[in-house]
Image (tube, rainbow over all chains, first blue to last red):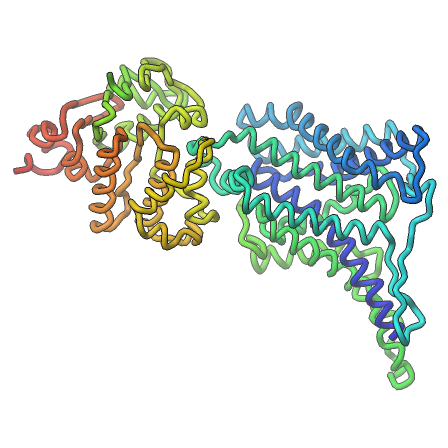
Length: 331
Length: 238
């Protein structure tokens, strides 16, 4: 039973957390690709930016003498989301919009977004250095424990993990309702489907582009803050998970919001399953097993975790090039 | 006064102009049909009206207002509707959502218009929850026309509405076009089925090389031996 609880803690809890963060990031990447037709390389750094904005705002709140039993980061997230959105709209106005106006090819916009990545990372390092920061300076991270009968271990997860997963679910449901029910949400899907026809139907493409950045950047800030609450705040926080996020967007079928969500969780769980030590589950039968069965039975060592997303990406592209949910091509 | 008028319109995609002086004028009661050989600039004429092609000389007036080079999403609220020849539906949206996109610019309730579109194209009501990409060519054309009608246009422009349709659907689509026109909507359309289209046209325009070759009523063009020989295949219709 203890072994089973170990599995829940290391696979179910970790997979849900990683999957939620990947899903939030991948939805933004896939929406931006669907509407603006380019791979937004700077999306990871937009997540990092969101986390740093949360960090600074929580410092400001602490400086104003506010204290709480909860980390101050929780209270400033809505404002951090708003500021990240403004920053994203500003980046679009400064760098991407002029290129679009000139009719730049998607690859030009991709390269521009790599430039934005470097700029954001440089800016963050300039202001905050290369060190790590914690959002739990003043209060300890609350750890929830659920005792399981017959087990020496408890099911454990932290408070930010629980809140993060719940917020992700709320955000996904809200996005679903927006895309399916609201006028602007339907117009967004129409633009992704056929931008020329959307324009001749009277839909203002520029407004839809703004809406795309608002949603993409808002979700990126949530994902970055979630990640920062789970680990720490650092300049390369989300750049490191850019590969699984892009893999999720591609595996899900580029432009397909639901595909990105499903693939985000798929890759999150695949990663934790791949690095999970299956030997643990065999421990109760240790005495009856032959000698040659090793105690360590992970599919890949933890340090090679990043290869999991890559393998899934390559296999998907070989077997089903348009992704699980049939996605758009890059043209 | 004409609903729409093009005076000596010159334009293209940059580089050599495709339109070299097109003159078109139709009233709200008219069905105007543009015919002509491939590359004559028929579709380009519609695109020029809708701001999708750069107009470099001449004037385009809609209800007396100059609309040359206006943005398409600014023209829709003025009362222009346009059905492109290809890719004229949103494939991953349902039939009903496609129609709703046609009403995107309207602030008022569009339930009545939706009901009248369903009345005009009964198959659409049946399939309103189905994705438009799953429909047959004829039904897609209905969705495309219905989408444009949802904006309550004063002028409906159709680019080869009968292209690729079976004869049964061609007849049905033409019947609907006449019905839409009787409802007070001016029609300007490009057609390959020249003979059939001119039969329902009150105004006909034969374009070649980006300029008008013949202009007249549909009947006049059908009866003109030269038009018949060059563009309709065979002699004048009996």
